[in-house]
Amino acid sequence: MLDRDGEDLLRQLAPRVLGALVRRYGHFDTAEDAVQEALLAAARQWPADGVPDNPRSWLITVASRRLTDLLRAEQARRRREDTVAAWPVPEPAPPVATDDSLVLLFLCCHPSLSPASQIALTLRAVGGLSTAEVARAFLVPEDTMTRRITRAKKTIRDSGVPFRMPPPEQRADRLAAVLHVLYLIFNEGYVGTSGPSLQRVELSAEAIRLTRLLYRLLPDDTEVAGLLALMLLTDARRAARTAPDGTPVPMAEQDRRLWNHEQIAEGVVLVSAALPRGPAGPYQIQAAIAAVHDEAERAGDTDWRQIMLLYEVLLGLRDNPVVALNHAVAVAMVHGPRAGLDLLEPLGKDDRLTAGHRWHTARAHLLELAGEPDAAHAAYLAAAARTTSLPQQRYLHARAARLARK
Image 1: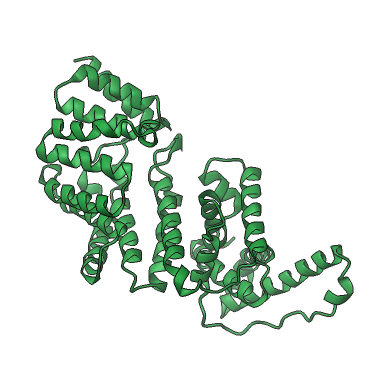
Image 2 (image 1 turned 135 degrees about the vertical axis):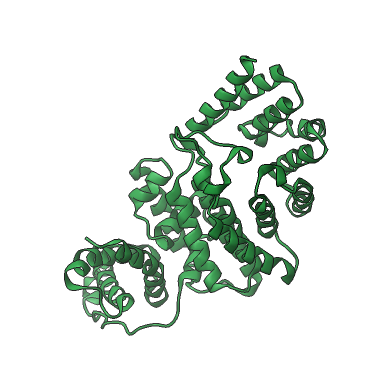
């Protein structure tokens, strides 16, 4: 079996090999299958034979041969074996300087795909995760995920989209889709929306790895830098976010000695360099908010006024109910819980918020701060009834029970 370094190498090379095949031969869906088989061949052979001098070229050669076999089989089924049989087997590919990972990311995040399909295809094709791994990450059966990925690949194939960077007039929107997909992957890993665990580290780690790749390919894009900074600054708190039994620990109660201060330093440098270079986008502003939280040595040192002002800037960029909710909490920390509750009240008419637990949780917290334990108790129970995350349910029931005993 390959050691950890070998597995990491294959994961890093997978999107570059797939990109090279799709650019050279087309057939995205078949090329993806061929690359997976080449990766399996490497996992079997490299431990015994050693890692080749040029592992990428080795993988491209093996995948190219397998792609030829697959295409021949497909053509045979279409009664064209006589034409395809004349195809030469590709010679070992010379090293190619081009890194097609960015083009591959754009392809996987094509607007014709649903967000769920974009995420699944990105994790499979660019992240190098197996279908079973993607299925486990999203807590769905493997055959369900297989159908989802198969449909996504068919959509890409039928769209006839060429394997190249989008034209300039489409590039900004397409990059925004890529960033949004990476953000969704990170969030699903950082705060699992369902299941027995609050965090799924493998997902948030993969989102950070892919965003690092994107930042390496687009180092001058300030929103790419902002997203990477946001992920690092948020993930830095991971070790302190859960109690031994897995229930959430609010930020104000976390042991900040457990925070990853190297990640915090890296994130602060990234966002500090990005903000002065032009109009700040949503990811940069969110990263700045995370930096203010992370740089406070104690919860009581948090500069809530600066956070409140940053949320007001973010509201001007993104009219989002979750942003409005977070702004209300920041206002409460600056001007008192009643001021926050006044802002929360109209948000309670937005079904996008009240269908989940976040609005009810925020309201319960502010009611508790305002000295209304009975109302806070009811709000905590309402929040618990609206989450499918078992750790969140335990936490919310515990907060409600603590108030009931007073």
